[in-house]
Image 1 (cartoon, rainbow, N blue to C red):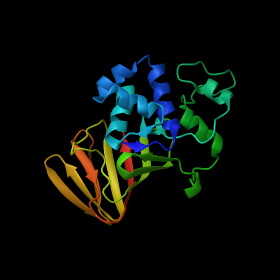
Image 2: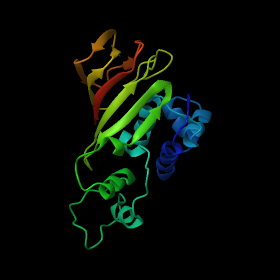
Image 3: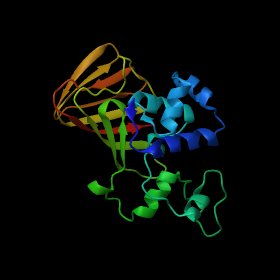
Length: 220
């Protein structure tokens, strides 16, 4: 596991777990990892791998976007008004979707759909994988990210393949990636793209001596 650089990720995982009344032991059992590992992630002592984070968010019923670090706190009034399950204030349009804290923060911080490079929220995961959020439309379950795999980085350790809900799409901008998809390996080079159902066992790894950078979308 990588040393944690942003304890907020673990704090947000713990908040989502607590809100749902799920114990650390129960979450660890669902994700098939140790109780100690979940505790270390929640306290910011280490960061999960891509596969572990996807397993955690799946078990909690949340999106990846819900655990990106929050660099600022949105106004309490907005979060109160937008909290899932809460009644809308009389002045709020009834058609507005309930917002997660990350979505509420996005609504406060941006009046434009354009995301500048210095506004990206960054999530550094285990094994040299970095996710940068490129944008988000509240209420739409799509994670739109710039993903970097450092040399030797992999999405899941110990040769394991991962599966999760939805579909994913990737377009390689720099470097090379090896995609294991079911029983086959695909060698992705610059300019190539891939799309597949995320329920297919898969794993990304970078065997090249330079970073691999891709634009990725995870839907569902």
